Length: 154
Image 1 (tube, rainbow, N blue to C red):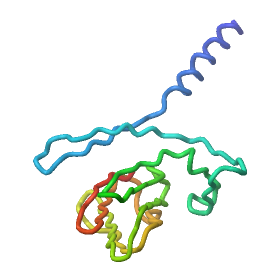
Image 2 (cartoon, one colour; image 1 turned 180 degrees about the vertical axis):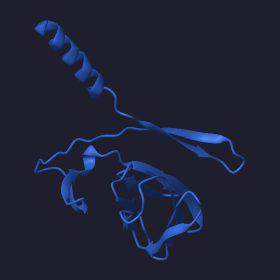
Image 3 (cartoon, rainbow, N blue to C red; image 1 turned 120 degrees about the vertical axis):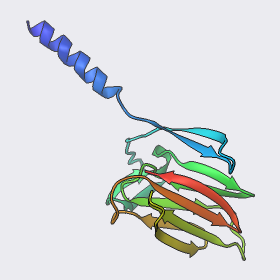
Image 4 (tube, one colour; image 1 turned 90 degrees about the vertical axis):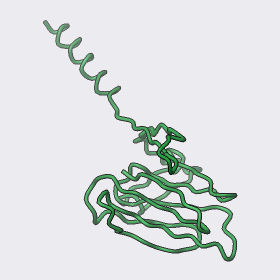
């Protein structure tokens, strides 16, 4: 009887360990054709090694290593845009590389009803605080010198 309980417990725990939910993100052109599909892998590992790049106080006052997060990247011209973490717990980081004088970068976040809930214009790195809004899906528009990049934020 005890062996049966142990086997049931092992079977139950192994199912929980492999039941993480992952997502796919799709991008479409203006005609509605799908132009890309990106697999979004969710990680929960926290790394506290001294030699890793640590980001603290941005993510619920805990220390999270950037290399343990999935960083999503896109290019607009020669500029690389990085967004992490996504899904977020309220704080989102947007980094833009190779910024030059005269570059105009505008970030806008919309809810699914199309209402603008955030707008900002800065130089290269942004911290977007969405913790005052309900959990859900939001749309992030990044406008860089009149070119746009669209993101789904969870």
